[in-house]
Each structure stands twice: as C-alpha cells, then as structure tokens.
Image (tube, rainbow, N blue to C red; front, side, top):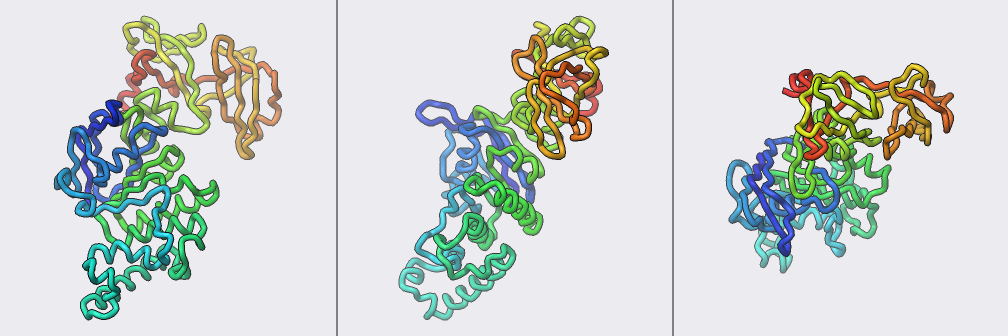
Length: 383
C-alpha cells in the first residue's frame, strides 16, 4: 500500500479550466473521499492520478515516487468504475483473472491458451485460482464464478469489479462513483461492504462521489471540491460542524443548513432580521455577513417571548423526526427546524411560532468571499 501526493495539479479542456492548483496528501491506508457537484473536476483528478489523463501542470507521487512519466499500468493502482467495466463475454472467474494474466503471462501464452500446457504458466494459473477463490469468498461471490456479467444483479457486478481490483494487490484503490448505478437500498448495503473491505485490507482508498452521505459515512477524511478547487479537507464531523466556507456548509448536511442575511455591528454583535445576538466577532470591512445554523441547532418556542417570529409553511414527517419549515418576515427562503415527533405533534400549518437561536451555534460567513468568520471561542476550538 502507499500514500498519494498530488501537488498543484491544473487541467483545462478546450481552454476551460477544470482543475485549479489542486493539492492533496492521501495517507497510506487512508479512506479519503473527493466529494462535490457534477462537473467540479473530481473524476478528472482521479483519472490524472491513474494516468488516464495528463495534467497541464503539477505532479503526482505514489508511495513517495513521482509517476508523472509512467503509463497507467506501471502506476500499480486499481480503478473501480461507475459502469463496472466488466468483459461481457467472460465469466466472473475470467474477469477477475484478466488483470493477473495480463501482468504475469505473455501475450503468446494468453492468446493460445498455453497456460494449461506450460509448467510455469500452469503454476501461475494455480496461484491465480487460489487468489480469486479467496477474494470471491471474502466478497460473497464464490457461487457466481462461472456466470457471465449479464446473469448478475447490479450489486453482484459491483462486487466482481471490486474483486478484480483486489486480486491485483495494488498500491491504492481509485473508485469513481461505484455506487451510482445501484438502487437506494443496495447502495446502503454495498456502501457498508466497501467500508468493511477497507478496514479488512488496510489499503489506501481514494473515492469519488457527488453523494455527501456516502462521503460522510465511509471516509476517514473528505475533500470538498467545487469549480476545480479544494475548499476544505477534514474529518467528516469537522467539515460538518466547522465548515470553512459557505459553499461547504451548504453542500454538506441533510437537511440543508439554514442561511440568513445579516451584519456584524461595531461591537461584534450579529444583527439578524433586526434582532441582535452577542457573538464577539470582528466584523468584515463592509459589515455584511451570512449567518448559518443547522436544523438541530435551533428550536421553536412561544411567539410571545421570542426574538424572531415566523409562520409554519410546511411540515415534513420523517417518522422519528419532523422537519418544520418556518417562513420569517424579510427572509427569502424558509428556515428548517428539526423536532422530535413528540414535540412537533401539535404543530399545524399557519401557526405563528418563535425561533429560538443559540448564539454559540451560529456560523458566520463573509457575504462577499463566503469565508468563515469565527468567534474567539470557535477559533480556539478549531485550532
């Protein structure tokens, strides 16, 4: 296994920048996810690491060694694609054996089936069989080895694609949205299997996804990429609770984070919809900010005693939790508050209720740059 270091990678297609000076350091044995919206450059970065695309600028190291001049096959990484990329005319066994034969047998031996005749090739085939059968047992596909891909379900095909990568014992696994073609229930199952596989192998996994739930639940760290730039790298909990950029805060988390326009006055107080909250924060030069808070970091209260009052515009029943949509005067989009079923059972559409905010939970972002503005307490926690 090996670490992967990406330094100042830039890439453009037809003059359109796709990646802008991207740098990443993936540790040996780490599971790191690249997450971002479609078109942000995450798959292009993965292909550059694999050697399938050439960067315009920057360098890639695998295991502390530059691989910029090496073709894909010499980089010793295994890719698992969204489309599985299985050979439809080969059995599961032969699909898994293909990379081993490609690496260990000559074209003459492969092309004329001499692996069954020559002693050295026969020994190699016996090694392949042991490796494939052990991997198939680990992935729960031992009974499928003689089937063709067309006879498999989506989840089974994905396990075969994983198995074909595993038998190679690569330095790193590169996964490009491998769960995108699966239904929701199967995605949850295979997601857990990939996490367990990473723990079992102790290998380096670089995983590309647009699904923030996949990134949050599977990764040691996540890197959020937007418009070809890495906005933040950190543990899932850090990125969720301590976003460094408003775009990160909006992208990570479901239900979405609440964002309201406000300003910071000269005494460091946040002014939101005409109400002041003590934050002790240095204001930006223009004073304008975006104030954000998670749905579980606020609550509803009696309108008579509240600083902010709104009207319930929508109620979402999720079973264990209820999402209350609250329309506030002066705010373009409703605020979402998460309540327990017991608390929210008496809420009704059109009710006038108060919004209860904890100033310690408010996240402040510069309106112009989107960068985080921290209170002294938040700065101390972040460091």
